[in-house]
Image (cartoon, rainbow, N blue to C red; front, side, top):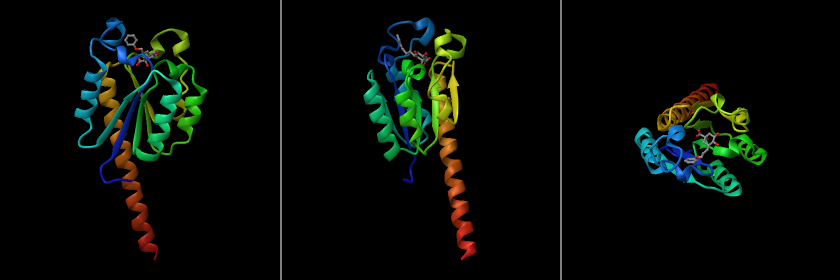
Length: 162
Ligand code: CA2
């Protein structure tokens, strides 16, 4: 794992329209604004921020995160509620996954209550607009730090046993 954590923030379909449509649900901030919020919260970590409207491309980005990231933050948008293929891809990751949503899907239509991301997520942040992303980045960094702490302690334990 690199010295500086690498956070992947992946965004699914239609999130490129943020700020242009449905401001009552998703707010007035654009995706570029959300990216700026994440970068400000990243505390020196390297951030890779992607958006795609294509399921296969989102899965390719999950595979890339598997190789390169310390943690993954994902708003799979509509694919959250439909994509077994996305879940299969996420299941191959060993890094922490944080699910994020601008709105609170649990308070919306029934079809948004099922998430194919939640079963493999360390946690979910939803309902706070771009602040959800800020909290998700902070949670991901905390999880990365905790893992690094565990790894350090087990190396020290191994050394003591030698
Ligand atoms: O609240 C979220 O972040 C969602 O992931 C957003 C998805 C929705 O399907 C999920 O249930 C909850 C929709 C993203 C669409 O974004 C738009 C942004 C502006 C205008 C239209 C759609």
